[in-house]
Picture 1: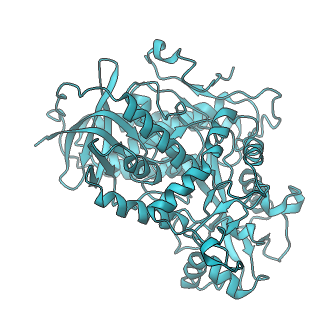
Picture 2: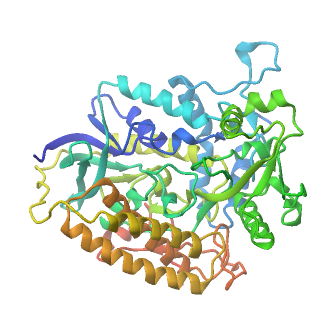
Picture 3: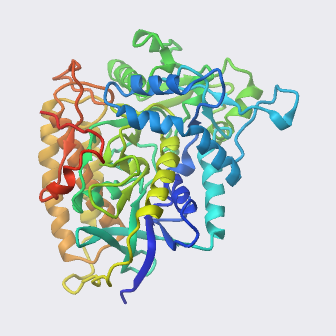
Length: 545
């Protein structure tokens, strides 16, 4: 039986962005946090490296801004970059107050005043990566989850998937959500809805992301009339563990920050042939270099070598990588680590303003689902966690100050015209075909011909998926396939519109970078032009011609 549930705020997604927003809402606001699995099922839990922050006088906000702009290859929205970086100290203070135990330096005499231990990552000019060993995401996720479980105004709903948003009177007033445990759809009303569902890296065959990274929030917002931008910029992490028993295991960039070398099977280093910064070049440069060497030599992988550092140092600073590799028979204190690039981060997303507000009043988008303008054409390492917390805090304040009165009751979900499916093979087949297609044709290196082929093939898949969706009862796999297919189509459309190579997008037919940088903007059919013309609210995204 369909249930009608009402909250002041409905947050879809339980990672760093969603939980930190929920914890910063006024206590008199009732809030529901929905998670597709348990609270730790998203990407935050698996983040190893850390969070970028300006924390000492040897660094500066200007330096962090400059590094981010440089990595973003001319497409960062500078006000968004400065806004995000300037909030880093307050974010760290808030996280420490919540109970997150970041690593401290052990070489200072008074432990009460020890500085944070900061590490180095690609693209950064200073040590500014705050971390908890090599399991920073897990440390943050566990603390926020425990805080959320004891917050009296929060309702935590696990095993729920968003289906679509509900609009009324030009506003977002709630969402239809699937209770996957009981296989029923509920209409949940809310004065504000927040999408914090992560990215869409599961569009690719090889990825560092958990299974839930299926682009749900991007697809849901698009169907509700929100613009998206820069979805051609998909970051491939250069170093994911290459092993038949290791699924989606990322080997943190912090290893390269502490001196690990990328080598070929014969032990030869190769990064200096591609960039003077070597292993500390931005991720797009490193990923393309590895891809080039693998194709040139016909390799299945390359290797990451940190054997020259002391064994105790390796075990102390990288316990997660050390123990996981050891489980697979690789002692990283004695052996190099086999690695390959894998889809890691979706730099584009739903267009939002400084408060995370979208084109649709009442709808906010934060975290990897959003396009804030921070990342531009290439996300700099460890800026993403910072972005989650900065925009979550900003959105919480905006919601508290502007949230309207509750709307009228919502229409119930109508499933009277569908039936249970006896053809689930359609979902499995299209899921695998889509991810293989994206990897082969919309990967690290692209061509116009490959992109056009991918566009036509995905269009046929979407027709089949839409027909299936209209006939059968919805399930989580069907919802994820529907969303992933749509977002893959948007990625391809963005890539075809960009007639240059910039940042993470490299097209062999257009290898040069244009003098003037433009964002790739897509507008849904029938979107409200009045809302889209409020240029003072939203970043100055300019369509590519």
